[in-house]
Image (tube, rainbow, N blue to C red; front, side):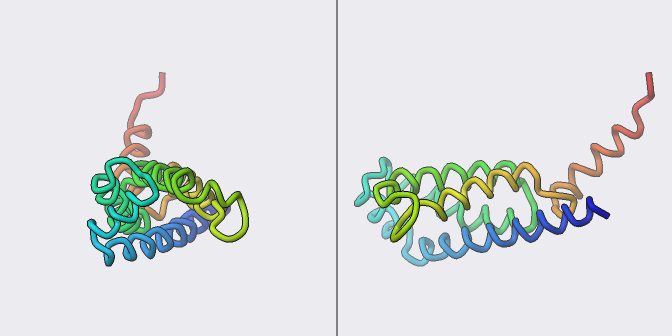
Length: 143
């Protein structure tokens, strides 16, 4: 029973974190690669066009993948990279809390990373890979 609760909690966490990243990604998608790159250039992010494409892909495509539980470790790493980049490039000077602070960005980045490596059994990763691993271990002879 406890394992089911863990799986549901991981699913709820993935949905919540994924929806927030998706909302931010759709804002950047609507601004376009050029608009996002201009914003990145204004705050001093190197290779702003490459960074814009990467961030939009992670925040839109990655968020959808995260919500359904597909390639969650990879997406979690992407969320961490984007969040830590945003922390240092945009939010650090504002401090941890308050207007423009980095507390939310940091928590989202690290929650994404943690959930990426602990996505639970209610994820496509488990259906596609986890069950196969479980059946492979069950089929191994006992020494």
